[in-house]
Image (cartoon, rainbow, N blue to C red; front, side, top):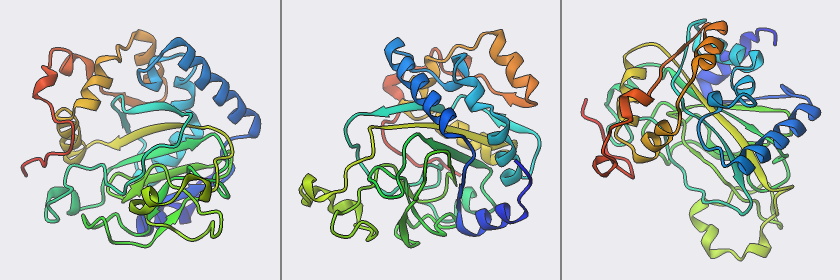
Length: 278
């Protein structure tokens, strides 16, 4: 992928980007096959830990995008990735993923946030339900009502990317009578299912998170160590030497979180968000 001088500017201004035609239709079809194979194997660890998905996670096209957006050639990966298969529609609510959700004067809001997430959706959402929803230009405030909400109209082969500080919802729905009208996600429960546009096919997505070395990344990792879901995920992820070798071949610093959490008592962890002290 060539360097796009406007990509960084637009991403910094709006807090998200949709990069078109990164993968071919054949590649996406193969990604679906791999996802279903992982499900049959009952594999639930991160993408680096499986030989079939580590090449997706560290695909040069993805890494080039991340390097442009984080403005560094020295990327950090810490085991935060997944392949999700949803045979039935999931929940949707606007939220942010960074530590400072309540404190608008916290460290997360003092500088450009150095952690971003990417999503490869393996089906079209430009006319179908199941799309990622985002509040435009919402990445510089902790107010989750700020920014105009919209559907990310991804098509097969596109790559979605957003700051962890960007307000987003994971599983939006479109109304049949007005598919481009954004219905507040809090109202979904009042609308009968037959009034929504169905999905093109059951939803499969790969998600991956990368950071740039620094205090805010360190703080984010400290925050994740307080969250039950992430500690459980890290406990499933035991890297062998091939994982470290592959990361090194891509010039990626791999932080192995398993040794840090393997003995953690999960009863001490938070299921939902609890604010970190500054």
